Length: 407
Ligand code: UTP
Image 1 (cartoon, rainbow, N blue to C red):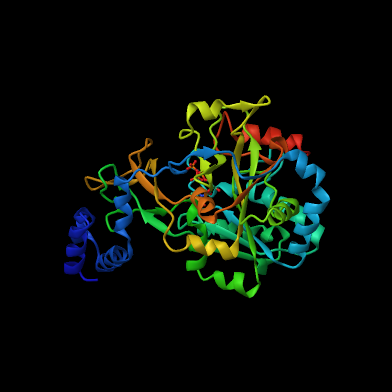
Image 2 (image 1 turned 30 degrees about the vertical axis):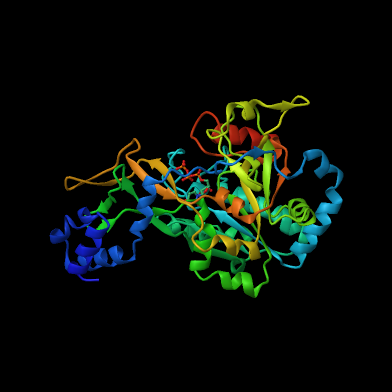
């Protein structure tokens, strides 16, 4: 793309500000910027005019398929046998979502490299890899582990794994890939410049994992190895059970296309997305979208809408292709975004614009059926979101200790 074409293209998209420092750039920087303009999808920014909600607007009812903690305990052997067989046959892989910014933690580096140890080094990544080995030692076989990074943290993440010898995991079963990006803009929809010659492009949300994996050419590994199921999980839950055989078995036996690990909400007000059914489809309704009467509704002393999701999903690979054809909506995330202002790069401490994100919760809706698989919070849910307070380093450490992990 040459300068004249870029000018016309940007004008069409109302983004001419992106060339405001063009004359100050070196020839190489100019070429790079023109190249970025050519490959940036400015249509994404139009989402600023459309308010997307996570769950749609239909009638909310409880999840169609659920396995309670009690049922899971009763049928543990049956569920585990099916899951262990699938793992032994190499039909399950896992995807670690590590492309986020982790801005709430306020730690400068990939979140997984954060030291959760107290008297010794124990990174979040190491703890997660220990959780992985709980399963592989049972099956005697490693499963493919796909690790999604971002353009910002990819190098640091790869180096960390390399420095730690991949935590003893077979190197050829670990596949890194970089998450796709989307432009970030101010509240008026003007795309930011991250630098005089660089458009501000940010990871496109945790729902971008499957298209990013495919765009990075890793779909061929799924095909080559006949992977039928992918267990997707976030980086922040240090008690995360990965490729849990019972969860895999239950999802298969209940004939669901995907499964979500859920925990009982601690109170109606807890700020978690809740797995429900909406218009006959599985749906995760965000806490701020749940009508008050439903939020508080009880039956036999229990909340009717009680299953909070913990970012641990199992997806059928064949059905995942449904999510590939651009059907996932973009959501706006109000964020503090570094950008150029009057010739200077500023790094605001407060939100100043939007990042565009696709969400895993929308993938669940597209799947058509989802099993709510209840697990015990104290044993499987210790998120590290904030530096202090709720879901923080301190609360996660306390839960790790409770589960016998030496810190
Ligand atoms: P969060 O919603 O906690 O977002 O991500 P975040 O960006 O990591 O953290 P904050 O909000 O800035 O503090 C939940 C999970 O989804 C991954 C994260 O790495 C984490 O495992 N994620 C999030 C991605 O992989 N890519 C994204 O674009 C966003």
